[in-house]
Length: 234
Image (cartoon, rainbow, N blue to C red; front, side, top):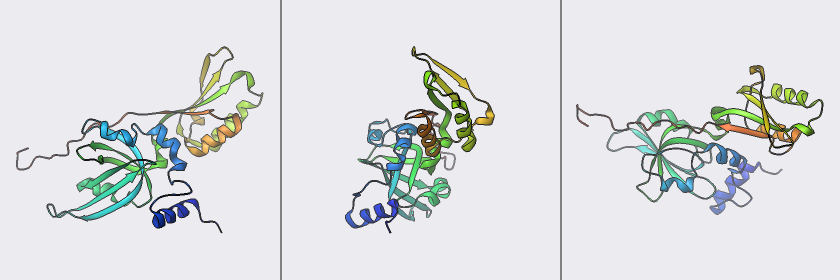
């Protein structure tokens, strides 16, 4: 039988050093486009210590014990379809995130960018599976509906979709009028939904392409002080 796509792609990369029939990030391209604050290709252009949110596939992992501190560390390389960046986990960050960093795993990284080397490096403040981004950072879900083409039972269809994908994100209906104006209707909290690929696919299948729209929270945490005082001195 045919191998699952993820397994087939991993064998291609292992044998040839690159992917042939696709890329493991293909299912997540919409998340990368809508939920990342920067493109990986732009990281080296950012001022040092800029906080970013980027996604990538873990392509290399090295773990060891620091000779200076005698503590474990994890150095990983992550990549999108064209570029790569490094991730360094030490001290508390190693304890928090080491278990998440696995080869060929798609992850979202939030952290501080270091651009002193050719390949940008991120000191993470948070790491999580990339498919969690819509749940974490969707402020609202909008359904863009053409008012003049709605059938009498259209709202029943909206209700059924919302009930089939319950979650915590508010659902708004954007009714587009023929003259170009739009009317927004906020639904009851009882119809809050779970944003993501499954709900998006179901909505677009029922009402047409581009019906689903996620309003994304692009705010970022503040830069953390990574340099602690020792013996009262900086």
